[in-house]
Image: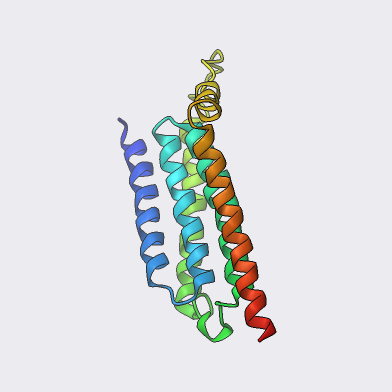
Amino acid sequence: MTPFYKFQFYLFALMAIGAALLFVTRKSPVSAALWLVNVMFALSGLYVMLDAPFVAAVQVLVYAGAIMVVFVFVVMLLNLGRPDQLPDLREVGARIGAGLVGIALFANLLAVRREVLPVVELAPPSDNVVLPVAESLFTDYLLAFELTSVLLLVAIVGAVLLARKKAVT
């Protein structure tokens, strides 16, 4: 394992831990959800480094994409995020910190490009990694998959009904 690989791995791990700490310390549910999206992206970076690109893609698409959109939709629908509770990025220190993190990530991207691109070779296509997951998901675990989708649908309908009752009374 090269020192560059170790550095990248620890960088993604520190990003995940830092975003997770910010997630649990936020008062606003909307800003907490956005920090949780950062955790999901850092975890997907770790999955890519562990040579699991399919799991990384599923992490981004399912968790950071779909689940977090539903979560933010329900939070906004229930009006849990109040404007007086959103000072997270309005402070000067938070803006400076965000700028420093952005500069560090951009420098990291340039370093990865310089380090990895000359070494990349066109490899022959490997075995399909999606097929075994899809076969087991839609044969052995089909019932659990469908029950999960129905449970999410019921949760959304319940949130809408709760919000409508609150608005009517």
